[in-house]
Image (cartoon, rainbow, N blue to C red; front, side, top):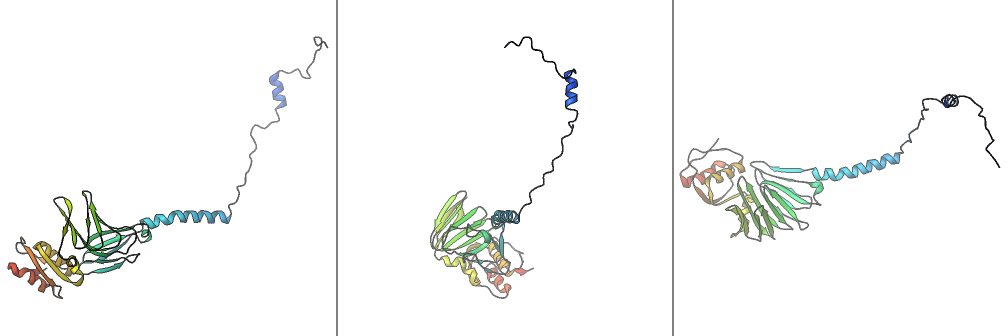
Length: 261
């Protein structure tokens, strides 16, 4: 079939721009706005979200919530920890721990002096400054005041460490710092380290200044120092109701009369 002589005449005579305007004139320039109604969240959605939020919040609270126990000057304090471990705080001492996190990590921070009787279980840590005392189940005394630190093991086994290293203690052994590092030493009777629990003072070649500081803590007093304190004191006595009696016992060997401010 030959198509050379076929001619198609268009129905319009406008140019393509005019055709475009004619055909699409009725189209709106602005698209119609479509309103989408948000789906309402069910009660279950909010319940699940609340449970998830609480589940995330509980560990956060448990980790950061800290409880402190303080034995004021002139007093002692007995504390029972969440696992039934016992702590006896000496005068002017403080411990802090996380009761809600306790069964994840048994950690105690100590300032001052305390005697611990630890129940068996996971590792029990006592942290005081740069020192850490770690045990599984034992009894021990920790003294940590100013620049003096020592740990005495009464039963079981105790690991004492700092940045310089660590030492292992067994009953009747004591850890102390000497020449910049921790050392372990054997002592005659570890029970003497906790005589303070019964209101007894036991000093062996202790600087007189430190003896007076201990008396001040136990009685919550301030002692006037009118003479040299460059002495070492050895002796033992029981706490009396009148601190003046104790001061006479301590001062008489040196001819010193201490007075309470």
